[in-house]
Length: 144
Image (cartoon, rainbow, N blue to C red):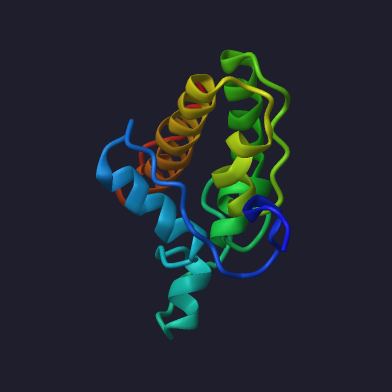
């Protein structure tokens, strides 16, 4: 069998990052497993919502995959993170792509851990917080 990171099975083992708070790792695990309460996830649990659209872009139904990978806000954040970390553009189609991005770069071990920590903390948790601030507190989204 080939290297672990080349597996395309649904089984996923989160690369726990000791450089971020435990709640960030738990968030990342929940995000990859589609266990967070997005509009679509709540709908599947028979919770009625006024709309299933993404609250950040209003372009597609809000799934975790959309929110973290294909949402206009997320793609802009990934561009900024890549530029800030001086790494190649982050192309993500699945949440797992974000979780494993650091494994496919030719970065040193320490820089790889830093990039992983930045993706988990500033971006993933930042996108989720921005979404929650908009939904629950009506705080407008500020891209910067």
